[in-house]
Length: 128
Image (cartoon, rainbow, N blue to C red; front, side):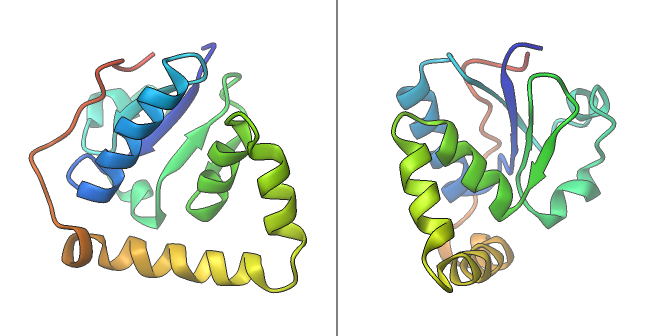
């Protein structure tokens, strides 16, 4: 695998819109995307749909390193152009990471109520 794999909620409007934004920003250079509802694709990485309930998952190209939830969001931001400086500042400002982690949990747990649901969104890039 030569790309980072982003596993996201394909029914969530916010998640799907963010994946679409990443597709445009990244143009397929760094990331590929799989909705957490695609059980056959998840099985390739020994992930079950239930594993995704704790939040989005990012898998490194070597398949060894994995991030989930707010850690995955931070790592995705870090990998984007200019993201390293932003994430360093975010992690170094006292208390900001805790606030960010808390916000992620609230959004994760309320995403359908706050942002709505849609038909399953599948990335145009497809899985790896």
